[in-house]
Length: 151
Image (cartoon, rainbow, N blue to C red; front, side, top):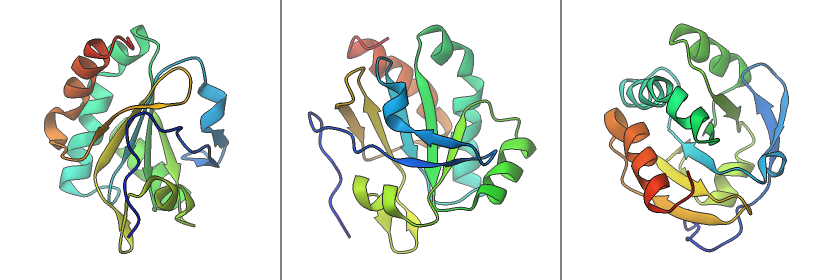
């Protein structure tokens, strides 16, 4: 298992497919804050609670110009079903090759640990959440973004 990245480090770029099969590059969001959250598995209780909390706070993230991206090792097809089932409103990235998870140190065996990185406008990690409370995480992130003066 690799170590988690730390605040102040550059966020590793990636090019991967989202829930629609479109390519997503982290570097394409430079200039706006990004919430990059890793989660173990689509459509499981904790992951669903976390995703729905982000969904319920989408308008607030958008108003602040913040991009939310969820990452797991699930397939594009699995992400699409999860996205549609819960009416998610943010990007889900498929990391079946586990390259993103390895780069960010979130891999825990065959799945991801629940970890969130807040990335600033310049592509640097501003904050790392190692302990995530899925049901309130979206609101918690919004508060931290304000505290860090990123939104």
